[in-house]
Every structure is written in structure tokens, then in C-alpha cells.
Image 1: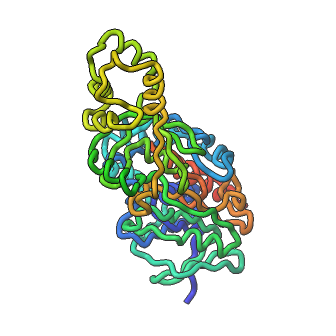
Image 2: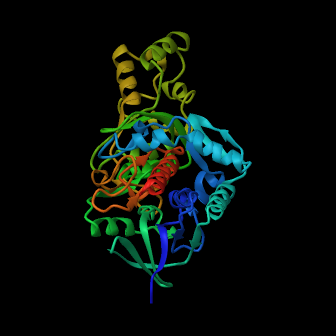
Image 3: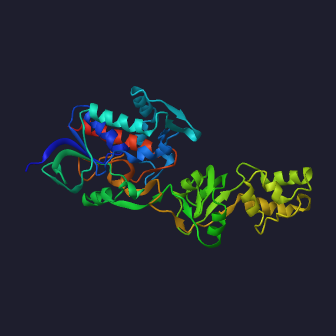
Length: 401
């Protein structure tokens, strides 16, 4: 039985796959998008609590983790957040900005998915869901994809099957296995944007504080400082600050937390000692830390919580400031793939063109989106990489002679 021919086959009907399929088909080439899932773009659906944090206006390559920190620059520069906003406007979708440049869809995530499907349909592209791929080979200048519904072939093959995060949604190692099959290296993968877990006394303490949140500055040994909320959970630490830190954290390394971000704590304590001498240190702490957490901090060895401020020496004040502004904790792990929002690591960018996302080993083969070793911060950055990498691959496909 002859393979059903297409110009381009896209594996994966997520954010990157749908947009790439739509743009690759817009200039007349036949396109097929395949996915094993029952519904397309499930990560888009759950993003932002259903509101879809579809991009971030502050996107630069500095907001991404990769073995090659320069790799994402070309694609991101050529398809910006405003390009996606313009696409939304053509579909009469509106948006609003929340904190830190995050853009959310006013019409909820389903509208974004509908827009992507409409774009694919308008371009003449075909979508086949609940379709299992059992093999891919390359022969006679074409890719031959074996599915449970028969074989299809294409001049171009785009791999947009994502990473390992959230396995209940069908995540798999398919992209990495296919990359290795065609001679690509894969950077070791790990869960990213994921809560941190602890054991022993710290786990017990954090569990007792579960539900308490406070704004901090947090940093892992190899990453930037993140000024966002930290949330105590039954298993450890979560919230935006900890999710961000998790992408940089490695086992056995500490996480440093400033509980008084932006505050000159030594000066503030000395001033309080003069203006409120009879106030206890614990009471003073509770004026800017959540009550339950302030009570816990007041039991630390270097934080004499029962003392009145008037009785604190300058040395004690210095020690308190250090304890609060340089609190270090060592996680035992993360909550893993089950709750990780994205995958760090992936298809090595050394084997891909930064301009087109095309394989350097095999013309016509492209890897886009989460499966590539480009991992964004929390807050819409990973969607922007999906859009930008998809657009770069589609542009190259349309330009192939």
C-alpha cells in the first residue's frame, strides 16, 4: 500500500505543532498534523488556570536555559510577542497584562486553541488526533511515518511532541528517541518549573506552615535572583519563586532565600529598637512576615524572638539580619515530572540551525518547542519559544527549493 503523500508532516498538535502546521501550509504546501491525544493543545488549555498566559512582553534569550544560551536569539527576534498578539487581534481575541509582563487571554485558553485550529484549517492543513506513530524512516528524500491508520510520507518532518512534563497528559520521550535515531545528541532531561521537596525536620516544619506565602528573593547556585512569592506546602516549597529556582537547582545544592527583599534589615532593626523598644522581636517580625511563619522564624538559634528590641545588641542585630536575608535550605528533590510545567534539557542545539530549527544532519527534519534544549522561565516564556520556534521552522519549510 502506497504511503499517503504530504509536503509536511508535523508530529504533535500542541502549541508549537499547530502554529507551525498553519504557517507551513499558508503558502500552499499540503500539511498533516498528527497527535496521539484525544484533544489538541492540552497544555494551552490548562495554562494560567484556563486563562492561557500565552506570552511575556519582556522575552529575550536571557529568559531561557540552554547549553547554548545564544541559540534562541534568532527565532525570538524574528517572531516576537507582538506578532502573536497581532494574530490574536485578527481573530478578535483580546488580552490583559498581569505582573512581570505576563499576557493572558480574556476569552480563556479555549479561544487560543480554536484560533490555532482555525489557522490550520484556513491554510488547508489536516489534523489527525488519536493517531499512534510506531516508526519513522527516511528514504528517497522523504520521511515515511508509520501510524496505526497507515503510512504517510513527507518531504519535511517537524517534531513538536514536547518533553516529559505532566505524563498524565501523554508526555513521552518520543522526540528524544527520534532525535537519536537521526544522529542527534540529547542533553540530559530534568523536571523544571517544579515544586521543591524536603525531608526530615524541614519537611515537618514546612508542612506545618502549608498554605503560608510570602514574597522573597530566591536564587540557586547557578541561576539569577527571582523576586516573587514563595509558598509552603506539605512536601516543601512552591510558588513562583521556587518554581523559577527549580529550573537551575541541582541535587545537594542549597537555595538561598532573602526573606526581607529590598529591606536594609540592620538599619530597620536599629531604628525599631529606638522607636519601639518594648516590642518583642517576634512581634516585630510579624509586622512584615506572615504570622505563622514569623513565629517559626522567632525560634531560630540566631533569632531571639522573645527578646524586646531594646535588649538586642548590635551584634545580635547583625546576626538576625544575616539569618533572614541569607537563609539557606537544601532540598532533597523535586515533585518530579508529575507536576513539572516543562522539561529542561532536550535535543542538543549543536545539531540544529538556530535560524530554522532544521537538523544539521538531515535536511527537512525540524525539532521545535519543548523537545529542544531551550527552557523558559515561568510566565509565558515557554509559549513564546513555542510560537517563535514554530514560525522559524515554517519559514524555512516554505523557503526550501
